Amino acid sequence: MIDYNYVSKTSLQFIFMDINLVALAHTVRKDTALEILRDISAKRLNLLKQMAGDPVPRLWCPPLTHYTEDIEIDQKRMAAHWNFMSPYVNSFLIPGSTGDAWEMEDNEINNLLNISLGLARDYNSKILVGVLKSDASATLQGISEWLSILKRKAAKDNAIEAMKSCGVCGFTICPPRGSEITQETMDKELKVVLELSIPIVLYQLPQVTENEMSSSLVTGLTDNYNNLILLKDSSGGDSVALEGDGSRLPFLLRGAEGNYAQWLKESGGPYHGLLLSTANCFPRELKEMIVHLESGRIEEAVNLSNNLSRVIEQVFAVVESIPEGNPFTNANKAMDHYMAYGKEARNTKPPMLHAGISLPEEVIFRVGNLLESSALIPDKGYMV
Image (cartoon, rainbow, N blue to C red; front, side):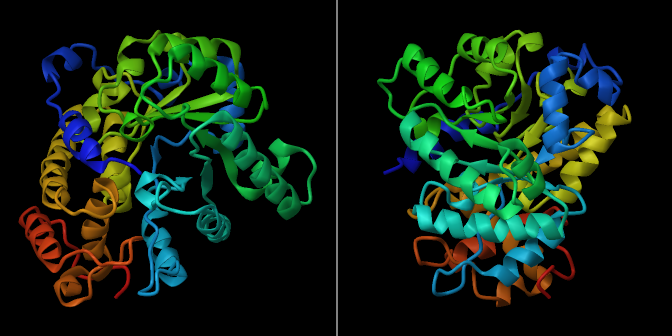
């Protein structure tokens, strides 16, 4: 059982941490796309581009899983949501925490991934398959099963070619779970998976795994495995990115919310990109922010980032007391309700959670007021 009180009280205090803009701004520069990636080894970058595309996407999303009242996956709603996101973000982690990865049984995950592979094909998107298990043995089994499925779908025997054919750019894994797990044990178990020689993404998620990979551990793995292509860090502490040697790390994606522009390289931050739950609701705004940064419009990017951060922090506070689900899912389902139904959202039944209940109407109304005060509710939603 996941302690989501730990998520809300321990992690979220970092998620919206105040960034010293003066310290970050002194290194601001107008980086080109090439310069942003200059610290990634050529072999790793070549594999990353082969799998994820060139240029490498800088905005990724763990999509929400939408349900009918019977808690079946709502395929019509899923397709409409992807249609809403796809002009701005087309690289997805499935399932991620926001998509109920930790609540789902294996058969539910398999169903979700099969639906998502079809959507990825329809919207020319890339998928990171989340194999989020508690130890290396279960992770290896999950990857093996999905490689077999992808090989059958693609009619290809080569694992990487089958992945590319299906739009899968890598497998996302966590370190073994448990507060007692040592760095040495993490290193040993992660190496077992990396020895598969397929593209792997490491996911720093102490809210669930109850531990953190050190910067030295990640650096050592990166030195020895060019198939370690990405690191997603949702810890909020960002120790790997802040303490590690950038020239010896993979492509870094920040998963914690808040101060988005300030954490990216153009603003002097350590991250190449973002993998955000809130890209479910604000894909256009987050993409626009990244474009501002790439064009040297740092002030505009920071202003947009700050406006989003303020509202999103308030929304997370509203959903904190909901006993079911998790804060990332609940906050984004509440906001997405308005993206889907626009001005009609308050008159539309609230979204269902995996637990079989809907979000409370009070939460929907309070979140709507927050979005409305910042002019973030569309006149017409993507489901209208």
